Amino acid sequence: MAASVLGQSARRGCYNKIVANEYLVGFSTGSTSRRILTCEKKPLLTTTSSSPPSICNHQPHRPFSTTRNTRLASPTTTSPSPEAEYAFNPPHARPLDGITIVALEQVISMPLATRHLSDLGARVIKIERPGIGDFVRHHDKRVRDTLCSHFVWINRNKESLALDIKKPDDMSLLHKVVTEKADIFVQNLRPGDAAKMGLGYADMKKFMNEAYPGENRGDKLIYASISGYGNQGPYTQKKAYDLLIQAEAGLLEITGTEEQMAKVGCSIADISAGMYAYSCIMAAVLQRQKTGKGCEIDVSMLESLVEWMGFPLYYAYEGQSRVKRAGASHASIYPYGPFATGDGKGNPNGGKVMLGVQNEREWKILATDVLKRPDLVSNPRFKDTASRAQNRDELEKVIVEVFSAYSPDQVTDMLETAGIANSKVNDMPDVWNHPQLLARDRFREVDTEVGKIKTFLPPGFSAQVEARMERVPTIGEDNDRIIKELEEGRK
Image (cartoon, rainbow, N blue to C red; front, top):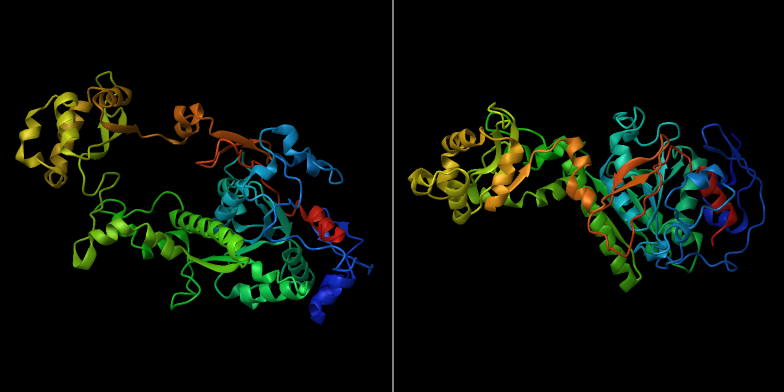
């Protein structure tokens, strides 16, 4: 591959001069949609003739659309504006419209954070390895035998820029993308790896400030990292995966049964870190509006999950015994958990329902109105929450004996009539077709390489703002358009 001007600039250590005097032209596109960079020198407008985008402004860098298939089919034309499709919901109505995030991210934690930010209108340029992409793309092929379940969940709305940042040319291109576009830079590499590649917070601030002297653009950068254990301390370089963090945070000790501990069924350590990165970045954006200054955010998976462990930690405070593992039941409140039912036709093992009794008033109603056993209320073995929890095996037999004559639906109807908290034990098809989610119109569609798939609206959105629901990208599918933006200079 011919050396690009940007690659030459990086090797000469004079990136600003090249930015000020040259730009890239003559790109060709490979079969994988990844740019092969060939360049010639051309004069560029001087930096004084085109002011850079303000980090805090609200002018969009590109027109956002609900789907990107029209833009991808014809890269020389602009997609229909969201105003045409959603007159009530122009893109500038979204809180983070006009903010661009450059994301050196992988797997779950940081991609989850940036997907939530993108739902709010932020532009996310996701840096991926050419031909391989984000590792999580290859964890399974559960979505139409092609796409990974994790990837489609947390990567809608994003633009994929495939770069091999071990190559000087591609690293220089990443520098240019950050300098020209980034209001926020995020990464979840192993601690120290970004700094070794010249992508640490101090490096970013320096080359952003030097690229456009006098603007202090780097000082406004928000830089967020997620790692297993944080950027300091004896565990900093220790490898960290979700299950390992569940163990380190003490979650495994309280999850499962007394006979065997169990992991949580979803990636809860990754999710907790991603949600704290999301909230910290949002807070940093608000703070920057007040001060004009960015900051560095260091989110640890361990610390994120430990924050959620407040109850069991204080339960075992200063040497007290730990919370007992109770399977799907509550460790210290009973009855609160799953109970077997019949099938309504005289056969046992028809299914399970969940119920929860949290005070003595509810216990009396359950015993008297549902179980038809008022004698249980005066039984000293079940007189209060602690007694019922201590004698849970005996009480479970009583409850299951009554429930075995009824189907799950009949039991939940009985509980609902009595005002006892309850739920069904749903499987995944039940959730996709949950009547409450359908009634509240919580599902949308997004485009993917295998066609449109169902997705969820993020919780709690304002009725006046529709979340972005754009395409899940293929590897490097946005290379051509992003590089064309860089050719055209800063708008």
